[in-house]
Length: 201
Image 1: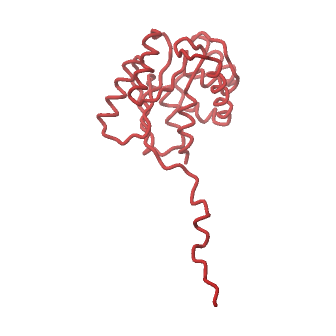
Image 2: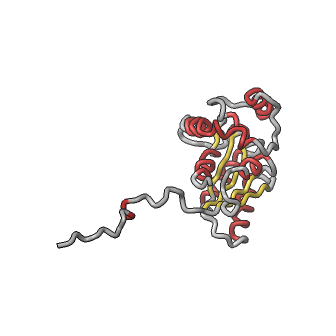
Image 3: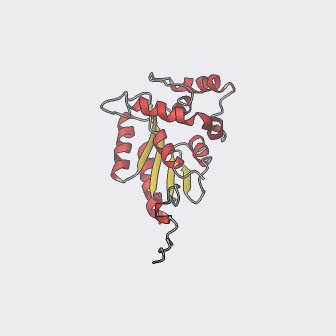
């Protein structure tokens, strides 16, 4: 009896592809330039990522993010707010995070400033740095003058990004229980970074 030919060609056992299915992101930032400039440089399709810098306090930012999400009628898979502790009231900061969670909006916060994320690319820090000292510290670490609204920071730091993610993870583990407004320094920016990295082209 002739042997039956296998027509499957092993497709059922082959890995068809490892890239994540594309998702739509809405990222709304407190800062109008620093944070949007950083996230716009991720190597993800511009169809995937929609970034806005609004320049308002955390509570208003969450409400505006919800309005944008609902108004634009886009099928966003992930909606994120990006904001700093800065000089905002502790109640406003923590309340904004709670409000975001209720609205299924994720938060990439920094206490005190977004620049903490940049510093973590170079070293682990677990003591608070006065906001005015961030620029000076980054200038030393970069070996050149840090420019706050630079649009090259993503490219300048990409080879150290894994270090920053590890440092940010370890930093969050220092706090139990978590109180974002008091956990200085701390950041969850790496959580958004890890999500975007799933869709790098």
